[in-house]
Image 1: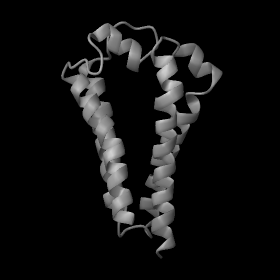
Image 2: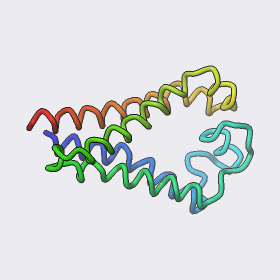
Image 3: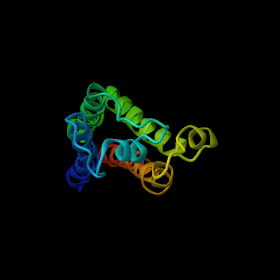
Image 4: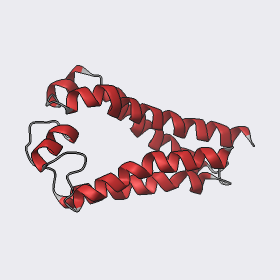
Length: 143
């Protein structure tokens, strides 16, 4: 069951990694143009996407985080593995919660980002954070 759960987290975090890499390559998916994409996925008033290197940096970090559940398997008793897993979960939960704060909503108010963030992006981040905590709890339970 833990391997299946690790695979689901891999897919859940790996898919956004691939999407960020695509944006770095200049793809505008899922929108028709760069301005629409910036309004959909950045939402802070800019009309252009962040530079390619930033998209690649996010893609790289997400790819490492997507692979992390497989690093965890069999090493769950090691303190450094638990610590990194808590950090990963904490970042996802913090991003998810931040999306519902007034400060966030003032800064990221462009539509359709604001609505999509409230409906999809923030809950997705919360789900991924809870998923990493659940994986950690499942691994610790096996000890």
